Length: 261
Image 1: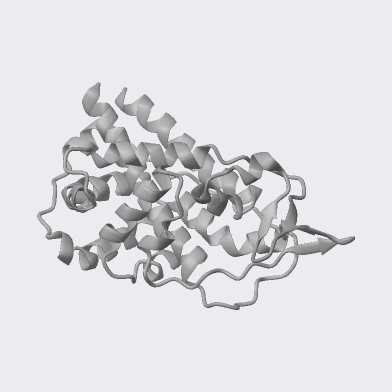
Image 2 (image 1 turned 120 degrees about the horizontal axis):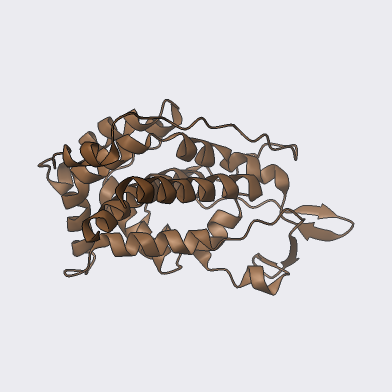
């Protein structure tokens, strides 16, 4: 049972890693001042789950760990991760250097409720556009559309492929975590903490009122404003995208607990 829990951690952990790769691109890399798409309509993309006839336990037992040096892992990471989805955005979003190191650090930040920005050295801050109605500022639903590729690619990832890739590269991931200053802690623990942090993000269908401060906007609802910085990043993706990401995480947990329990 303990081994099953470790496997489940690895599975969910890699999905979080990939989600952060994608989300960081949209949150931090897009050019400053880029215009956001207009129009409040958000079309939810239907995702067809990938079915497999191979038992999960047999597949997991057959996975061999790859001998790869952490500092030389980018090329292999890009090659294998690009096979996880047919959507072309994924390969483009994996062009950064030191993928495993940067996003292990980002996961650690998210697990502790912090923004991953300080561990990303190539981002440009997102330009924020509030929507004004009758003198009141709100989160603009049109802005949610820019994050739809994040949720769509995340939902399209091949579950079996993610298990295989994470298991193959887990030693490199653990090494990167140890280099952060955690010599005796399993990275899977931090991954579950990151998952729990994101799963607490609420889905709000109503308009979210904002209050303008000197240099920024804050949410009027004190409960929403109390969200951690990591949670606010996901919250700004909008209800449709939040539901997709959380549904995928719940699906993974259910499928693999059933298959490995």
